[in-house]
Image 1 (tube, rainbow, N blue to C red):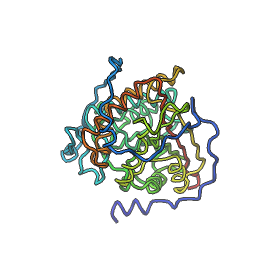
Image 2 (image 1 turned 180 degrees about the vertical axis):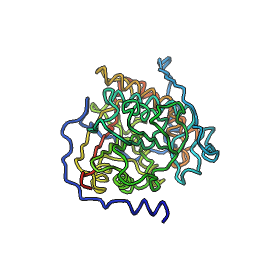
Image 3 (image 1 turned 90 degrees about the vertical axis):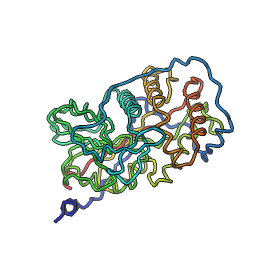
Image 4 (image 1 turned 135 degrees about the horizontal axis):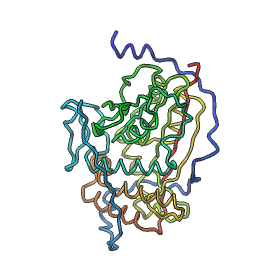
Length: 373
């Protein structure tokens, strides 16, 4: 019997979940969503017609850097055969047939590291919210990126074997002894035996998954009875509570609709809270808990924590706005390089304008595999 057939034979049939209400208690600074700024996306030509926005002088931008090694010692040369687009490198097609939207070079990796810190601020220093026991044996971080979450989690649980998976070998080689990184595509059948993981962690997988129900079914199969899954993600829609972000005018208000259109075109939709909740329930997870967190995209808030969170979110986006947009807007939506450049200038101008108060909601959904599964 092939290894694939063995894995399928080991997969338990999903149980019908015990209905669980949405968590009534959000995390710190968790908001009710303000005005949802969804509208028909404007074309790249629209922004080109506007011309470049006027410069406003020295903006005092923050720059945050970190040194990340570009590969691990155990990767084959085919995996390092990166694709390029406008001088930026992307994952090798030898790993996956799909096309992930983000580059995997040093500039993009620094953005991931800054954003890791931003999400740590969002959770008041916590790495997770699932009610995990102290005696974990195996945990996995799906789409680990530069691996910082996996490394921090391994430090916190030194007796737990921690695996981080990604389609690019961008993780450091100097890591705690209980960490390893696998180059793998979670859109394919997972290469782990049934009932193996005490904790399955996923974060920022927006527009990377082709089949969300299949994703959660594989997570259910690989999760131990009584183990947990935690998924932390966003639909990319921008909000404002005070109407300062106008969907008819602002480039940031177009962010969500444009990403949603691009995600539909490549068959990898942006994740929503309903996709996460329904996907977990249909797979068989129970005791579902949902938490919403407000993430400002600039330091406009007067609240110290939210101001700090907004500063790091701004730094992350500003670190590699080109990398975040050029594939989805250029290759997928067909925008020209000039159209993307002008749109980015408007986005940067709006993020620096403290009279505009944009934020997005990042949703955490936690589920548990039944003990008798």
